[in-house]
Image (cartoon, rainbow, N blue to C red):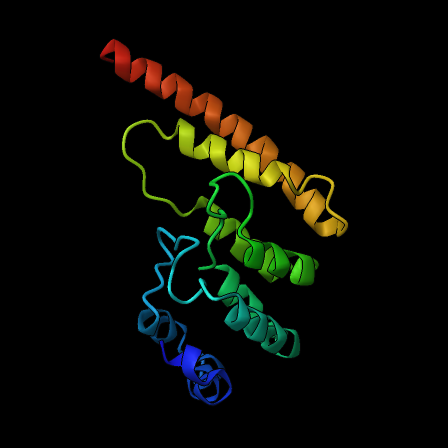
Length: 167
């Protein structure tokens, strides 16, 4: 990836798309899917040094953090904990309402086959890790999300039972 060769010069080119509000083109260049998300090993996010450069850039250009969190990987490779870069973004920008809304959109964007319950439970466990977060807005959001996930899981479990019964 060109960003691995020379982050500074390449990022100056790619970031122009962000400044020009051409987010979909930016996402397409890096094959980021805002519907089903990306995984921890996605080429754009799998380089810690590059992620550190990106985080430093975002700290200077905060208005773009919501657009990055919208497509950032949720889970670390263990499938249980937050992806380190995403967690860093939450710690840095969690007091921004737009950022929190885009994080929520990322969490709720998923394609499922079969029962949705396992997917919802995995995201619930992820959000539960933030219920005592140092940023109040994150704590409030996490606790609201936990309530919503618990309700959604109950509804999906009923739907699963109905499907199993042939209704």
